[in-house]
Length: 81
Image 1 (tube, rainbow, N blue to C red):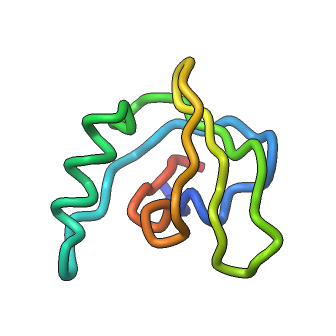
Image 2: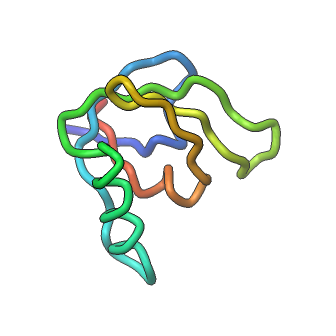
Image 3: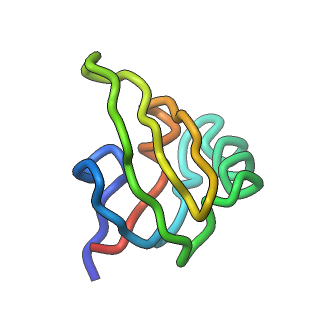
């Protein structure tokens, strides 16, 4: 099974979360906060909008909630292709 990160997902495409990356400095804390917000394995997620900056924020929907995530936070979310 191949994976990609939320940063790689095309707009308006729904995918399921595979896992949250926990390696690296502070990644465990970011993964815990994302999990608390509902970014958990098998939950459906979609990128609704992107900032026009290369590494800008993304507006994403997970379940019935909508969030703005930093590029670095979105990079922690691995998706099933």
